[in-house]
Image: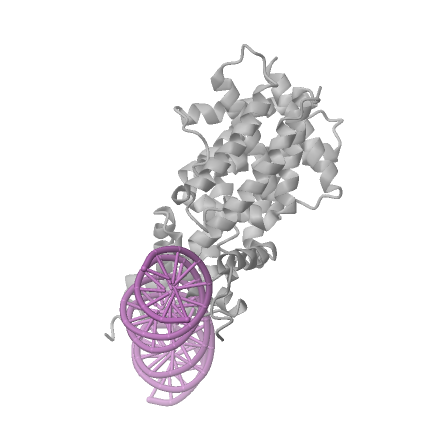
Length: 199
Length: 199
DNA sequence: GCCTCGATGTTGACAGGGACAACATAGGTA
DNA sequence: TACCTATGTTGTCCCTGTCAACATCGAGGC
């Protein structure tokens, strides 16, 4: 008992267990009492590390956003690509990340789990992702394009990849045979927007 | 007491109260005990009308979907419009509905509140909304377009309006001055896709 | 008019979660 | 060594969901 009185790295363990549950699509099972049981620790120990469950979920979401930005950033900055290629690859990468980490993506964007405005770090990372999108889409437009138009294209692009991801994740799309192919061709279809916008 | 033993229309009252809470963005406060209190009825009376809270929320969502379809359907079938106009107006109407009933829209599409697959009526209405979108977008394409292409355009369109709605609702977009104008111009931008797709 | 039955509402009971305060212990540091 | 802080524990309270047993009402058959 004297040996185990302190867990050692409970904070980390809580995050890990939560992540496991999230990945197993069991977010609804995340609770301090349950986690404490699984970690063989007393029921209110988690309060030493997170003020409440929401904060724990927000932290897991934050890590998700960090990984997200880490995946998107390199794609958005490949020098060898033409602007349209970068835009396309960024979109494909976005949706693929969302599908590969579907439950995590849900946690990140569904406001039912935590209020994003209470967690500035999360907001900051989300904003950074949007910046990447804006920079990449803007590069596809004429130099004469107004900033207003640039923001609009970036928004439309974000709406598209986000919507596509959500619809896939929530199983609201009719069955599709070759998902990867479909994603790429949808994104390709979409990139034309930038070109059309240039007239 | 003998007069008030039976509420009269508790089922309806439960739905109404829940709707109020949803519209006030307080879905998290929806619970049988709390509702019972507000309706001056005993704590387990709601169980006579809904097997659990999830079912109550699903019913409210179902009504939301029904209203949604009722709003979209007429727009999708205006004969006087050219196909592209219909497509555009459908998109604008979609996003406007979502914003005007933002909390309700969230309840309808966020899977954190109830599992859609457990409520076939809800699924049916959602499918009907997608059908409208598919029919309207397909009308903008060449007759020679494959069914595969039609489904793809409809999906891309749905992803776009859904994504735009969600981003707005969840406050994830940078501030925008004239929202209505922005929505229309984004949708206009989007409709070009159908035209580009025809080459 | 009376009786019975089904629908609806009530009460009691139990399990489980979130949250906090008071207390215990371990490990580092003055 | 003595103390301090971070961390873990226990006790307690209040909330919720859910079920079972019981009460009441209204409608239809006699």
